[in-house]
Structure formats: C-alpha cells, structure tokens
Amino acid sequence: MAGTRPSIFGDDSSGDEPGADIDLSGFAPKRTTDKAAVPDATVRRTSEEGGFPSRPARPQTPPLRRPVKSGRTVLLNARITQRAHDRFHAIIESERLRFERGELMHRVTLGEVVERALAALERELAQTGHAK
Image (tube, rainbow, N blue to C red; front, side):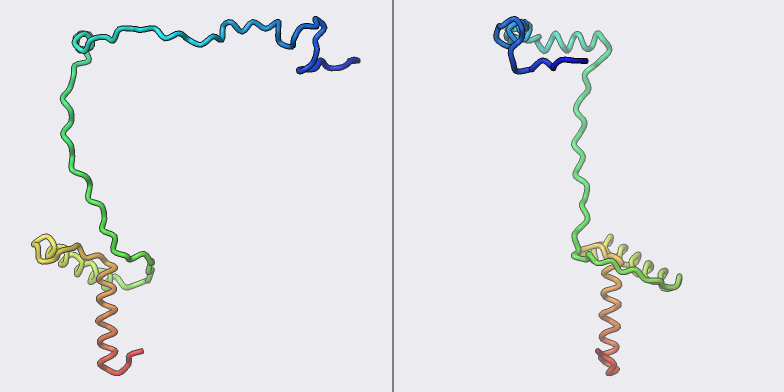
C-alpha cells in the first residue's frame, strides 16, 4: 500500500470546496403542520368501541406513617439469654398496649427500654455507693 492517505480537511482532486459534492437537502428542518386536535368525545367513543372503557379515578390513600426519628443512631449488639430477650420484649409489648389504649403518646422501642434499664441501673449503683 504505497501512497498517502487523503486528507479529511484538505483538497480533493476536483478542486472544489471540501464537502461540496455531498447532498444535504434531506436534512432540512421539519415544517410544522397545523393538525386539528381530535375532540374528546371522539376519543372517548373510539376507545370504548375498542374495548378500553374509561375508569373512575382511584381514591387517594392517606400517606404512610413515617417512623419517628428518635435520635438513636448507634447500634448496640450484645448476646443475652433467651430469658432476658423475652423480658425485654414483654415490656415492649405491654408498652405497646398502653400506647394503643392512649396512655402513652409514643410507641416505645427496644432502644428506649434499654436506655431506661441503664438509667435504673445507674440509680441503683448510686444508691449503693458503687457509682462511677
């Protein structure tokens, strides 16, 4: 393959301007046409004839309750006995029932029960003189 490559910017052998032999007439912008809009009654009748009946709008469902941000963001992972686990969850269940009866203004979480148990332990240690 002897010879040189043709330049994409340069002169071709015809001597015309580069790209003068390319027909770009097919790339003209589209002309806007004023099409009349189809009346709503025609669309409704045609869709029902085709088996696409109109349906009433679905009723709005109330938004889902988002969990309340408690500020508890640190994970505490500990191994406990099954009995301790059951006792924690029994407390949570009794607090849930109090919430449902209206005695409490918020749902009690496991994190809150652990914090309350820690506060009770700290009070007990302070009373016995073993506080930090």
